[in-house]
Each structure stands twice: as structure tokens, then as C-alpha cells.
Amino acid sequence: MNRAPDTGVVIAARNRADSLVRTLRRLLDLPERPEILVVDNASTDDTRTRLTRDFPQVRVLPLPHNRGALARTDGVRALRTSYVAFSDDDSWWAPGSLTGAADLLDRHPGLATVTARILVEPAGTEDPITEELRNSPVPGPQWLPGPALGSFLAAATVLRTDAFRAAGGFNPRLWLGGEEELLAADLAAAGWWLVYADHLTVHHQPSRVRDATLRRAHGIRNTLWFTWLRRPVRPALRRTAHLVRTVPRDTVSLRAFAQAAAALPWVICERRVLPPAAEARLRALEEAQRHSTARRYVG
Figure 1 (cartoon, rainbow, N blue to C red):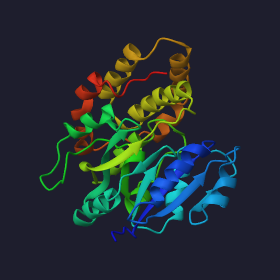
Figure 2: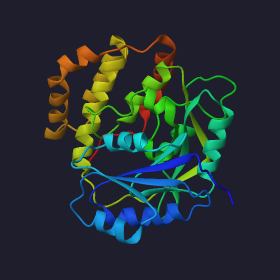
Figure 3: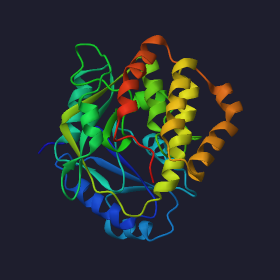
Figure 4: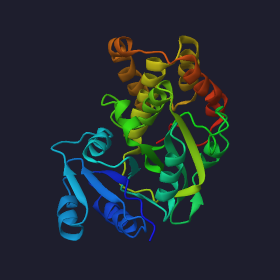
């Protein structure tokens, strides 16, 4: 039997019990038999009842209030495995993919993250972002086992636990929505590499229970925060101008820009421009980001 005893799976869940149950059944069927930890973001539906009744083999970390993406950080702190894979309550790993990611991390000590291709269910079609990952223009060393990335998608990524912890995990201020970008940049600044692995697979069956408008507002705000927290002035101005030109012109976008601007004192206090080598990775992505059809702020 294939096993990945040194890889744990963390799921941050809130009020989507049906999706979570489907995901847990898929993960429990994996030949790797990973440790699974559900961090419950203060669900008010029957999530905890169903976890206790139907999944006694799954560890549950109940939180007293909703901590957004920071729940993932709480989950990593509670694990003792060398590697951690994230799943959302509506996504799951294909058999063998956790073992494949662990093998890459074992063989390449300079890797911090391994991101898999994403198939959207029930049709099994590739998520549009997958082609962009596969054709990433980020330059990298020859030893990389796949295309170098400038960021990662949490629910499709296995991370080196020590690197995640050393970088501080997900920033609590960003809450949820593009929160990976800041962590990825800090990993790059510390000398780590991020890679895409086309032979690994994650399945995603998007839940119908989601607030797309709120996610858009957080995505715009967090992109602005990240940009001004880590990028030099000129690329920060370019990305800000691109957002101004391309986001929907409505109250949601206006509110997102206002929230970003209101935190200017915090941004100035926390601003740490990336070292040139890490900034070069993000600069290589600018053209692709401007023409991306998979990274639009809609909803």
C-alpha cells in the first residue's frame, strides 16, 4: 500500500457540511492514508455534529470564531508532519498525488511548495488557471522538477511545514481571498522555490454556498495590500493602475479600494520590499497577469 505518513491534510471549513462530507470520504479513500485535520471556523450548521458522528477517525480543531484563512495556519501548527496539503471543503486530492508531492519535496530540499493541476468536477475539465501554471514564465534553476511559480493556490498545494511556519503562515489581516500571494513572496524572499507538477491532480467541485461578491472585495483589497507591502514603487503603481482599469466599476470595487486605502498606516509600517531575486519572479509574471482570463475579479 502506498502511504504518505509524513503528509497531513488541513481543511478549513465553515457552514458547508455537505461539501465537507463528500471531500472527507474522498480523502479517507486515498491509498496514502494521510492524517486529516478539519479546522472548523465556528460553523453554525450541523458540521460538528456530522464530524463527530460520521468521522471519528478525523481530527477536528474547533475554533470559537471564524478566522478565515488563518484557520489553515492554526491547522498547520497542530500537525506534526513534515509536509502539509491543503484542501477546501469542496476539493480533494487524487490517489497518489500526495505521495508524488512528498517525493518531490524529499528529493529537492530547496522546494517549499508543489502545486498540482486542478480538474473541475463533475465534468473533469481543467481549471483555466492550470494552463497558466503549466506555462509559467517565472525563471528558475535547472534542478526544478517543473515550472517555477510566483505564487500558489492553497487548495492545490503541498507545502514544506517548516518553511510555512518560518514564513509566518497566512497573514491574519488579509483574512481570505488571494492570501497566498503574500506568503509566496515571503517564501521566495527566504530563498525557497515554488513549483508546478503536472502529474499531480486535485479535484474541485465548487460549492454553491459561497459569497462571490465578498470574495471579490477581499481579492481586490488583498491584491492592493500585497502589492504595496512587497513590490517596489513602479511595479506597484503599474498593478494598481491595471486594477483601476479592469475591475467592475461598482460599489463593491469602490469599497475594496477604500478599505485598502484606510489601512495605509499599517501598510507603511509593514512594508518590506522584496530582494531583487524574488522581485524578478513577480516581474516575470506581469504580462501574463495582465492578459489572464482566470484571474479576473468578478462576482
